[in-house]
Image (cartoon, rainbow, N blue to C red; front, side):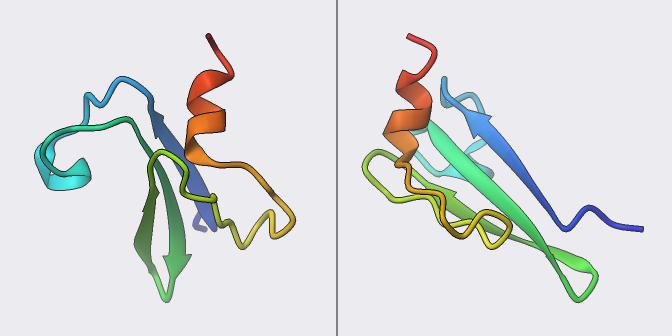
Length: 69
């Protein structure tokens, strides 16, 4: 049993450089289970978030980060 998709919202850029790069900007990551392994897509700033689970989603990473302000 696997989770087909999960999201990590690193709004403070606390993730390791290996995962979100350097410098460490706020990053929205979507992990998708593909043939038993997770593939990651990362979104920052004005990148439009793309999710196979929610194909009609029309939000940017920045809109997600700003929601809690």
